[in-house]
Each structure stands twice: as structure tokens, then as C-alpha cells.
Length: 334
Image 1: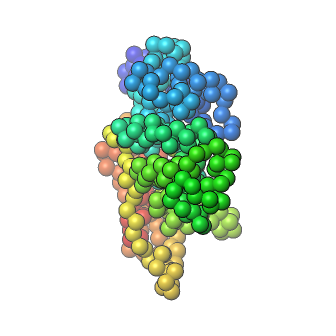
Image 2: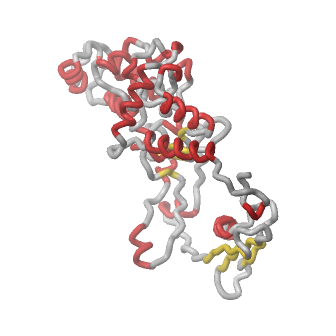
Image 3: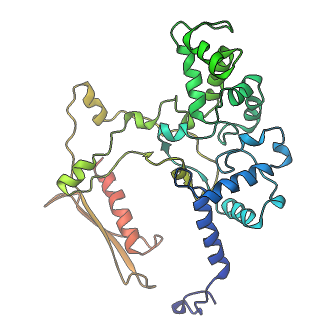
């Protein structure tokens, strides 16, 4: 009944799917973490945190900032039905943080307590340590950024590894934060930071270290859209969320490889850029007898010029052809 008429159905509106789609838009608004986040989302955070499940009872309520960013659960029987439905939709459709790599600023803005990518067992251990409580309560640290900053104080000039250290950093911590043993807090902060997988640790090497900044000015000057080969997601925390994910979260960073482009820093001439034109098309687009194709053109008489008929196991659409063409062109330029 819900199928299109051309497939023998009645094209009746799928109310269940429609309501789920509406809930997904609410979830998207809830996860729009940043300065323009809706006020209701903060109330939702507080309600979800307040009604944490019994297995989270050992963690202070104020450490629970966002259930999709952190590793805790809530008692769904005690929260409003709208929030309960939103959390269920998020779980059913695999909403979580995912991506190849992220900016350091994005990693630093993540909550550090109950960090989702820290092993649950070791995570509960570090959060209940005496020094961890001092870092939260006295130093006011709630994010990865705060822990990283504390850990960096270990490198303060003149710092001594004991509670009576009189270096500038230790004096400031005693005076401003009433911390009795700053060195222990610095050391604990470094240990917490080390518990983060490399992909989520801003102190670790990141792909952005060898990536080039996108050359937006060149796009405008040449009126050519240059392919951005960077794999680091340029967005903030709100842009790390993905839907329809499955399997385990990948916490492994992409393998670094030295390219001719990088070797140019050692005096080797950089390879010239190559312009490739690609496009996709489809006859009878949207119909059952649709036939899609992709085209690649390097230049007159170039042996790499190609016209590709999309296999039948790939959706026969114009968009599929446009997607396949640049992917195939990239292989031809290796």
C-alpha cells in the first residue's frame, strides 16, 4: 500500500516512518552542540543526567553532560516520553560520533569525564580518584582541553615533582584553586589524557599535522573546484555525529604515508596539479529501466579518458554516476 503507484502500490503515506523522521530532526537539533544550540536541549541534558541508571550512581550528576558524548545510561522510565522516543530513535538508527579524523579543537571540546571512547572499566577508575575529584571540583575541569592544559604544567620551567613545588604553576594552583598538591593533579591529568585512544587525543599525532589548508582563494580565482584531499573533519563537536552507523567505533587513525607532496619540504619539487573533468548521467532517471553512466576526461587523446556504464548492482541514478566518476578518476591519477 505504501509503494509508489508505478510499483503497484497506492502511495499511501507511511505515518510511522514520517514520525520517525520528525524525531530524527529533533535529535539533530538536540545534538547541535554549540553557541546556537536550542535552549530546550540544555533542559533535556539535565533531565537525562538526573535520572541516570543505577549502574551510573557512583558518578556525580554534574559530570554527565550529554548522553551521546559520554558513556552513561539513563532510566528511560523516568524521563518524558518525547525524550524517551528521541533516545530510542538515536539508538535504533545508530547515531554516534564517527569520522576518520577530527580537528584538535574539536577533540579538546569533548567532555573528559565518562568519555565515550575511554574503556568503561578504566574510565570509572580514573573518575573516582582523589586527584580526579580535585581536578573537577577545585580546578573546574570538565573537558579534554582542561585536562590537557593541566598536564602541560608538568613542563613548567623549574617545576619539581613533589607537593611542595614552588614553581609559578603550582603557586597559581594553590592560590586560585585551593589545590593542596598541584603536582599530583598535573600527573593525574596526564594519565587521564593517555587513556584516550590516539584518534581522540589532541596531544597525539593527528592527520591534520600533514594536511594542507584548503585553498579557498584559488577556487575563486580560477573558478575551478579543487578536490580537497584532507580527511580531517573541519567541523566542531556537533559535526562529529553520524546516523545509520553499525559495528564498533573505529578508534584507529588512518595510516600516515609520506607522499611526493610531503617530500617537497626536503627540496624535492612538488608534482604539478592535474585537472580532471568528471560527470555522471542517467537515461530514464527514476524509472525501472534507468541506465546510469560516468564519464572521465583528462584531455584530448589522453588514454585515461573513460566512459563507464554502471554495473547493475549499483543504483541506476544520476547521483550514483556523479559519485563514481571522481572516485574512478582518483585511481587513474595514482
